[in-house]
Image (cartoon, rainbow over all chains, first blue to last red; front, side):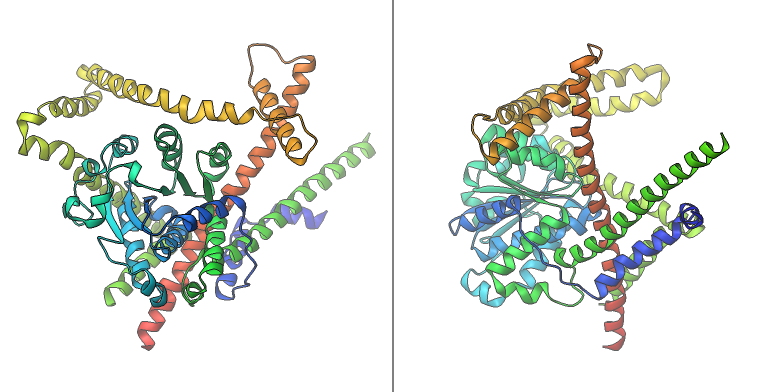
Length: 302
Length: 213
């Protein structure tokens, strides 16, 4: 038990170092573990895939840089999917701390590196393929008002231009003109889309959320209030996998050296989880063994 | 390009400064922590002023007072909240808070009922009348929900059958907390992956490419 005792007294900084190495090494030397899509993510993908060309998708960037490692990959994958299908995207943000930043940067990045062979089929034009309406404060109040008049909630786009001058917005007035709302969310905002917008107005809603929120959101997926759920980095990697399988043109983007993707992140997740599980098992074994040892010692003493 | 590299170096310095706390507390960590607190608060205040107060209160009052004078009441309620810092008029803040809480209770009552309670109750009413895998799932759902509800029923002491059902509810809760914990670990690991990926790709690799051309 001397080894066990030393392990129990181990400086926690060695554990931090081990986790750091477990994070760095798979990033430098990717393992390439297989990603198997699950039903909640497949449901979102299938819904977007089934929408007729020209349908309007409201993509709400309800997260900020604080959860970007999880939410960015799913936002980019969904946006790429929408553009590939020739869907019209209305981009908004209801998250105050950096929501507008991620909205602008995601649209800029996706439109910049979009595969030319896919852009030739459905060209991406600002104002007709997508509209960036920017950030609106108010949360539920804004969601409620958009059921009546989106133009009143977003009178100008992210650049300050009147929304009435945007060709796409001529056909989008309320949720009735939107085929689906996809919210990439952190915290409670994703829940609002389900229990307010879907429950009260019947608009189909899909949510991509952080892993912390996923267990709670499964309840909404089960009731059908969310038609699909992209949960955490795992969900994002599944959506990327589905996108690449259906549209191999994206393989080059997702395989770029130095480009962060959810699929690469899941390699690291697997290694770090193994490290954590190993320490949990070891810790519990040492605890139980030391209890047995002290019970035996007490028995000998008496 | 130089500006991007400089920004990456500043971000990398702050990232490493924050992570240095894992080794031990140090002045560099304290500086980075203070910078983060100050910048995030300043950004939030700027966002509120630019995206909330200005378009919803200031501009309507300035441009069209005749049709927007009612917004003065909203502005007054907002200012009344700050009265709590002056002991003699702190009671004013309670009135503003009462309006604020009353509004949200009214808004959320229907939303919670229609959007959460009723759909969850409806989905819990599952068929148990056939021999199939789905029925087994349904039995687990029904037993789990009922036993957890019994656990949270504190109007009666848990004895006998109720104690047994309540204990079963605890096991269901423990399984769900374990699942939530696992997802939380995944969420937190995702954040460190994001930071490490930034240090490797957006900082180190980008700097190397900029230097070597």
